[in-house]
Image (cartoon, rainbow, N blue to C red; front, side):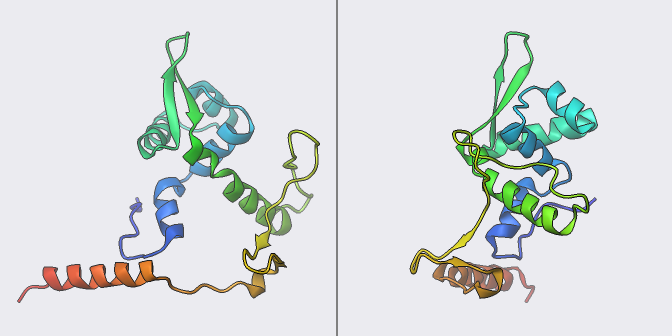
Length: 164
């Protein structure tokens, strides 16, 4: 089984994958965010996921602060997304948009809509400086000072581990 750690990567996408990149994880978050799933049986019935895998994913989400587990009147836990968990909604929508474009031969199976007016919701690449909506080809990635500091820490820990 592959590990969840991307220790050598100085990348927020890699860190996000450590939290929510295992099989079933995004679908559990999707069902919690958009389908109203809160109970273990809700997730299991909707996804057909093995109980041990589901239990491990839910426990991991609670540990990572994406969900809370609160006792329900039935005696079983109910799982609810925290603000951190709800912040996955745009990522799920973006992944769905990509899937609709490249992996849905019969068309989009779901439409994300604004709760109040029913309008279609989508993700857009937006520049905070000039306020323009951008095409994917117009976006680049540049290292920040945080990258430099992380690389320096990595280099220092590598030197400390080397045998002399």
